[in-house]
Length: 131
Image (cartoon, rainbow, N blue to C red):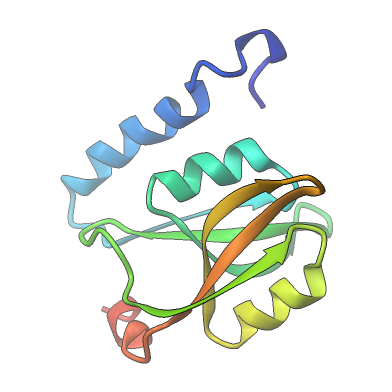
């Protein structure tokens, strides 16, 4: 976490961006990380850096988190045109979309917290991810 007196200076974004630049210069194709479901700043940073929400996981003793994924040698995943906007508190709906081939691609503040924008992944994504 970023100290509250340093919040708003994009430190989390920059601390993630620099290693990504170096990793893109390698032969690695994928990078994964997890983020707490309600951690708006981290979700926003990772989504802005090209990560997508791919799965709901429980790690670190059963704590619910999103598994984030980024293709290092490609800018974007092929996505469908139809979007679903889901409240960050609707874990059931988010899990259902993720289990059925959707990915979280953006985040939007609302009066009740934030919504995550989901898009269905193109049918060829699994082939792309297996390379």
